[in-house]
Image (cartoon, rainbow, N blue to C red):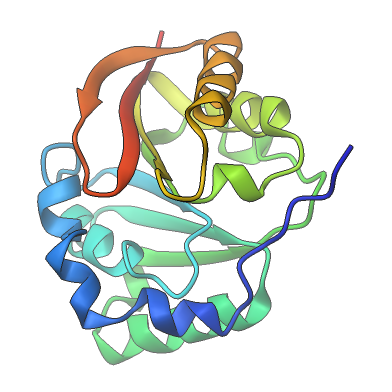
Amino acid sequence: MEKKSVCPWWMGYLLLNPLRKLSHKPEEILEPYLKPGMNAVDFGCAMGYFSLPMAKMVGKEGKVYCFDIQKKMLSKLTTRASDQGLSQMIKPILINEGDTYHQYSGTIDFILLFAVAHEVNDQRKLFADLSVMMKPGALMLFSEPSGHVKQSGFDQSLAFAALAGLEKAEERNISRSMSILLRKS
């Protein structure tokens, strides 16, 4: 199996570029799905481009679990959360390939999987593990960069999601992305 390449940690700074908000406004993308008190996941969170707005949306009664494989990404996320007074709502989690997430079984209301699945070697396991975390009826916004991931790759990811019990809830139109909202059945 071909080893997938992972976004280098220093690219996290480019992902935080304020110009990105011209095409990916976190509040507009996520607002329909996040409410105060929810438990959410930003899987492949990098330096928190989406994580911090998610924390504001779930508020002090909620929690955003921020998973990444790079310690430097999580370190910067932690600093940014502290600077914005959001540390209480953010839980950074350093992961390794092969980890399972069963300690979160059935506790998550919403998962964001934005431009990261194509970096994961075993997507079948990824979607199965994320599905285990989700409450029945919970939502996952799955999005991949259209200029980087082929339609066939996106379709293969959707097949793995379906095997994990995730079904299409609605199409999403997000700039420069192939996107879909999935629901745990």
